[in-house]
Length: 297
Image 1: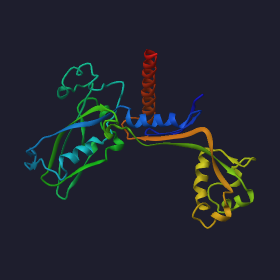
Image 2: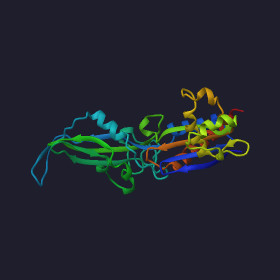
Image 3: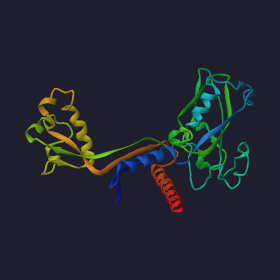
Image 4: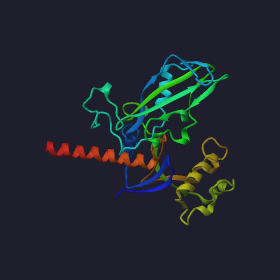
């Protein structure tokens, strides 16, 4: 039976111990998170060109900036757009837009519109993500934690007036739609004392792990302490003066069918939401596969 235990969790990261699974299962979960979990991202932008006048000061600004349109579009596209899966549709599945031609699609149920109006100053001023304003639901504003992301720099006489259109997509179509980074898993390991006399060489260094951390059988199975032991072994392992004398007095051994799975999101959704959506995507895919087999047989 598959079991999981949450080892640590924040809004944007999750570390889980999986038991009773194999690498194939976890790799499918990893790939689903990267490529199939839906996420909002900016897909189009419209920049207002021309000369603009500040009505208060009479100062003139020109729609001009150092970055090319393509570079600017890429920077905006990678911003974490808040994604609420139950409240929005893909454009080709939207009840109000799916029957329209692609260029005419876009409604409050499948599209989010942002606007920005920023001007430069003498010596230059960085334009950051918090200067973007959403048209509509305020919970779709760029999260405060990411408001300081720099987008471009404007100098005296320069202005950026633009509209940005975000839609739902999947990472398999473009990296901007992938909600995760650093998705990885590895075998859970236990520390094992093989030779007590030589193991003192490590303990005498007064690092993180002591002999008292191991049980009577010479096994260390606390996950956090095993991580510390892994770091400590670098002081007596390959490439050190103590390598030959220590000679694997303490080793790390894999625990069968137990893996530690960890990842971070880009802030567009919580880590727990991402995991739930990935499981939902996998379940739907296997259900469709089962139905295909049933029809074929």
